Structure formats: structure tokens, C-alpha cells
Image (cartoon, rainbow, N blue to C red):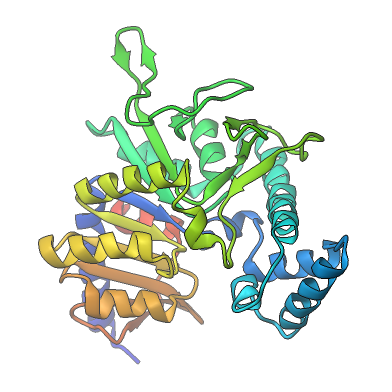
Length: 351
């Protein structure tokens, strides 16, 4: 058990590290753990959804689905269940549609909760605070398909751009060139780099991509532009619009002066590689917040980041923090610092 002085020193240390990242106007990196507190599905929710909804339409699909189903029933997540199996393309398309429906169902509930105003989006709070300075642009890189970031921005009156023009039929556009002006002045803007796609994005039969802000799957021949776990993940990320998005996100990560990762498991090599390069070479401040830090996240912090790292996860009563001074972690019972709300308390203390 830590004494009061040791606890106070620990809090002072993690506060300084958190402040260093916050003052750098960090680029946000959001994983599924950032959306799950809002009711968005986990990998286990998706597993259960697919088990209850998938309907093969021919013998080949039935055979392949039987093998996948067996793995899912054992508790494997989708990516592991598909590993090493020959899956007909038509069955993969059905999995993509059902994945879209699973996420969109919960996404719609979040939207309805937030319509009347007052819904607590911690992301809104920290973005508003960051924009109280001279900052005019904040970048968010996310692997999530849902629109929680968009709702958080819009509910706070913050302009949010995802690389598509505004409207009901949205066209792809270079997000670095898109700007919204108030009079002659560009408005403070959040750019969201959705490197695995979005619920809004669909591919038409002619191969063109369109953004449609819908909550029900369109009754026309469209394919959701989302990168699902599984065999086609690597191939999909080398196709448009993902190839351009990942290239643009790489440039954003390369220029960042700090990284604030929320609910990100460090299991995506495309993002992690760039962070390792920057943190090792330039000692960029990086903070990782999570309900439970994955083994990959702890490995990144301990072995692959610089000296200015801070990882915080939930403990039984409080938080457990990791940094260069205590790489094996230190329990701190004062506060839920592992959450985005708790992080805000660290960087904006009240006297």
C-alpha cells in the first residue's frame, strides 16, 4: 500500500506527463474502447450478432459458415474465426452487411440519446478546452466505423470533416483541402481520419464511393465501405478510399507533436508503426487511456515509446498508471484517471 506522500508524488508525475501531451495539441487515436462506453458493440457483441443473423444461401456458403460458426461458438472473435478458412466472396459480403447493421443499430441509439442535447460526450469537453487556445485544427485518427466522434463534435457546435462533402449525397474530397469558413475566417475544425471506413460510406455497382447519412441499410445494391476483421482486411486497406486515407493519416501522425490514445489496443500495425517511429526518434509525448490496457499497449509503452509515455488503466478502486519512473505500474486510488473524463481532471485541476 502506498503512503500518502508516495501517492501524491505519483499523481504529480502523471499530471506532468498528461499536461505535456495536452499542451502539445495532440492527435487523438481512438479505438473501439472509446466508443463502447456509449453503447457501441464490442467484438463479442459482433460475434453474437453474426451467430444470430447470418443466413447462407448455397451449399458452399453453408459449408464455409459452418466452419466459421464452430469457431465463433467456441468464443473466437471474427478475425480468428476466419483465419485459415476459404470463404466465398458472397458470404464475406453478407458478413460485411451484418457487421454494418450490428454497429448501426447501436449507433442510431446513441444518436437518438444525443438529439435533445445534454448527452455527456467527454470528447466534446476536451475538444472545447483545446480550442480555447490558439488551436484551429485537431486531428482524430480512428479505426471505428461508428459516428460517435461526429456526434460529439456536432453536439458541441464543432465543425467535423471526414473527407466527404456535406449533404445527403456526399462526394469524396481531400480532407486536407476541405475547409469551412465563417465570413473570411476558417472555423475551428476537427478532421476525422476513419482509416477502416464509416457507416456513412458505400460503394455503388459502378465502383464509385458515396457518403449517405442513413440508419437503415439502403434497399439498393450497395456495399458498406468498412474494413471488417478477417482475411480481406489487408487487401481492403490497399484499395480506395482506404489507401488514400491511410496515407493521409500517416502524414498527420508524422506531423503530430503528441498522441492521446483512447481505447486503442495497438493491434493495428498501420497505425502502431508510425507511432513507434515518432516516439522513439523524437520522444513525442504519448498518453494511452483504457479500461484495460492490452498486452500490446503495455509492450508499446514499455519497449517502443520514448521517455514521455503515460499509460493508465482501470484498477479495482482507482487507476493503475505506467510511465518511465514506474514501468510496472503504480496503483492510484484517487480518481478514474483511465477515462477521458479523468484525464481532463488531470490536465485541468481545480484548486
